[in-house]
Length: 147
Image (cartoon, rainbow, N blue to C red; front, side):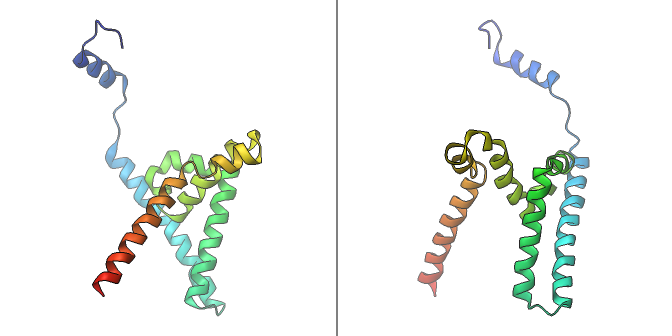
């Protein structure tokens, strides 16, 4: 930022250059796309139950199918289009986590298996896993103390 521009002037320039975000429309798209993904997951679970699997087995197969499907869609470049349309509606379900692991793996595969794929695969998902594990440990300790 040049020294002759004040912070207020810079803020005004940013506001003029930034497009207005249609918050309500974005929320509606996220709600419906996230709901559709979750409904597909429920349909998979119901189909598994019809074939005689237990609820635990059905849940496991549902997770596997959704993760693999999201990874394939990411590899084909379709999940990013869904993400641009739906925003948070595509990242909240388990499919978003699959996408966040698969996308960096595809992007960095040119750098090799060790420095590319191995080092970068958890660049987005790593913090989620780390804080999820730390939180579960903290909750487990609190639960152990209180019970």
